[in-house]
Image 1 (tube, protein in one colour):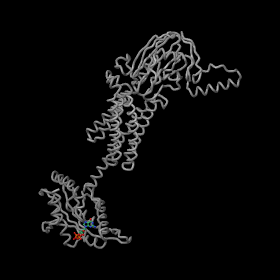
Image 2: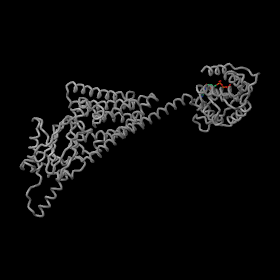
Image 3: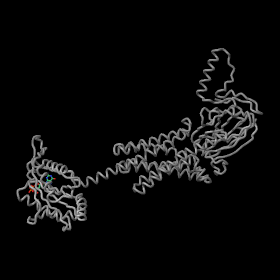
Image 4: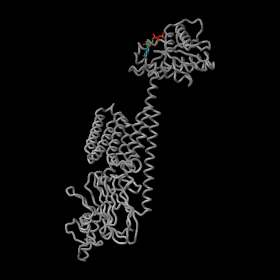
Length: 619
Ligand SMILES: Nc1nc2c(ncn2[C@@H]2O[C@H](COP(=O)(O)OP(=O)(O)OP(=O)(O)O)[C@@H](O)[C@H]2O)c(=O)[nH]1
């Protein structure tokens, strides 16, 4: 909508017939139908154009919100030189300014310089603070006209050191005095960065409330992210898992990039570094993208599982940094900032592709990752689209990247914890598998050594009784010969199950050899151990094992022999009672099998088992 000419101070109203829409000071016949049509037209126009104001707006009625809908704008064209305030004001009077229909003026990247005009009437003397809530505008010129006369002018922009701003605020502020009457505020903004201009005109108390809210919400957000970052650094130091370090780095870079584009960096960290304030933004955005890709590659094991995905990430990152170097060398700021925004989109898409690709390889990790990244991505896209003017500018749309990042950071921390849990579980499983005999589910020889050492140490220190039982299935070779190896395995499996069911919690049972088992029984004398062995022997005798050879009715019956020896305090190694138990077993075999015998000094030796016992002590 074109602004109507208005009669402020010394200038005369002019009528501009070329304006796209006039401000409805047309003559209309007073017929009811016409009135109705005009009302319809009015409501449509106001629907399309929001609440664009035509008449000077009362200063007292301005809301403490972005004033886009009260503003009129004029964008300079690329082929003419910059307008001065006289020319701009004249064009405003000529109705060449267009009413804005959005609460925030957003013209995207590398936009032509833009003029904003706000026409006001003050009923009484008043003071207000004019605030542009954007930190990165290269140059801002403020002109305050009262009754057509220029009464105040000020130039600001992030090409000047932060101290020059006068006010400790991340955006740009000027104090304005209003005398009763009509006023026009003209603002010229020029920047290759996103032309995003939330304009406020606030009383002192409104401005203080605004600043307090901002400080509180940013403090909360930064505090949370920094705490998460430090926690992950500590986790890295403790666990030596570099994913935590990369994640901490990713969070740190996000916070720094955010400090940069919100203006807090300029206000708090690099107030005099004007070159960095201009050039740091694309570099920080690029660093953020790079750290995000490095983290995603590491978190999802992309290098191992999907080489091509890794090379895409590497290629995109290298290309971006090459562009940055060219932009820096050629001092082409638009190229630097545009490539940073393009990289922002590319790395986000790449991260999503990585996540989707890994859904089949690492379903849980990838799912967590995708949910987290989607939250961050949605936020980043919303903020980007808001900054370049494709989405309406509200507080939550402009700060969606921060909200998304808080959600993403929390979910990624949970994802890292879940990943750690999975790794721990896999490690525990591997450890368990390494110590367990797959066929019988009992301890294997590897685990037995450690378990026996502990029992042996207890026996030696406290003198508690400790007995060793060695069990051997009788004629097992025949079982294999008749029922095959599968049948033999079935029997071994059943023996493992019976032993597990029969032993006490503190006993240690292991598969000692092919068809031999060793049970170490702390707090058991030889007579207690032989009672146990007899109970087990009878169970084995009674049990019928399904052969699994195809014939469902076929069962296998076996018996077992047992040799028992109680450890003595004179013995210096565990090998000695094991050898004695084996001698007793050998004797039980000689005596006719399917029986249990306690070792005595008259029993014969058996070389084979002695070797096993030696092997055990050598482990
Ligand atoms: N199915 C199966 N057989 C095994 C396994 N480990 C060892 N064996 C067999 O167990 C048999 C042991 O035979 P021997 O040592 O001669 O003893 P035996 O036939 O049980 O005779 P006695 O011990 O004297 O009663 C051999 O045939 C081995 O092949 C295994 O994991 N599965």
